[in-house]
Image (tube, each protein chain N blue to C red):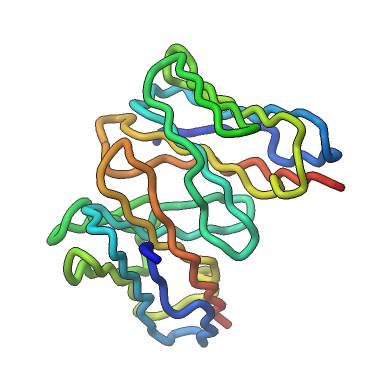
Length: 112
Length: 113
């Protein structure tokens, strides 16, 4: 089925470790996004890529980096994980406004 | 920062009841979307409204975009347990950005059998 695929689904990291969250979409969408979702805070935008070759900071970019590898793939990297980065991370994509986002099923990250 | 306020934050009702949830802002949006999120999954798009005053129906769900394009409502008729989930509204295009949505914090709906 067409959609957004995120890997891994679950991850436990120790403080200071690094990791990359992978995201790929097969709908030929231009824009891709990384959000984190925390209880009481809603969905907060970390980084986005309006088109292949561009990336921009969102609301909460500190501690993260991104790479738009090609039109299909948009990865999120935590260089030195902190407990405050424990969250559920969602990747999303869309063709253009006003079309809606298609979300992946999320990565549940715990930093201990 | 454009804010979308959703109310109520939590809603627990019995099967068969009607309900309305609200999404309000002081900003004007070019379009507004509603999503439903079930536990352990990502949000899924329900509807996009574009024109001020627009009303869209999706089976037992009715969505309305305010005339001034600053607010929206979602009305569910005869709620069923399958309607349980987190309902999120998201606005597009406020402040000149058409690339990213602004999300509300959601209304968590529980429909009891």
